[in-house]
Image (cartoon, rainbow, N blue to C red; front, top):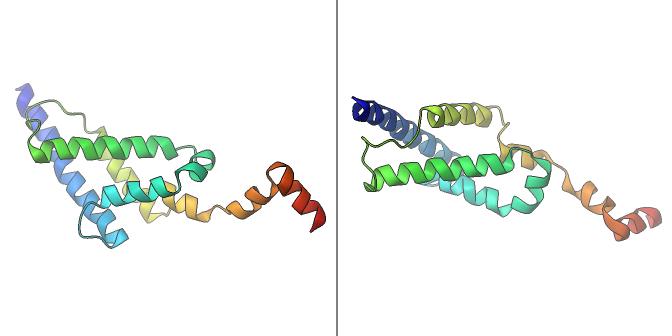
Length: 133
């Protein structure tokens, strides 16, 4: 009984992940691995963004988690009957899709931040430049 419940949960996750990954792949114009591409984009601006966007690290960790879970199921490293997680991953992907549509995901937030002002005013040299300009 328990293994059949795990199977249903894992199948639901697997199907949701495939759709989620396809949506991200279309967004970035790649054929597959949209989640991986999103994570690569996050890594490109990791240092600046994580200071200004509170959910940056949590989003990255969750992306890693769901990608690993999917890969293990896809590659057969774990059986669909074994416990891999709850439906909260499916719910998280649905919420993340809504954030993408509303341009409220972490990369969209990052693209809206004006870092030039913040960089120029930081530190001693930045303040000197401000005084003499």
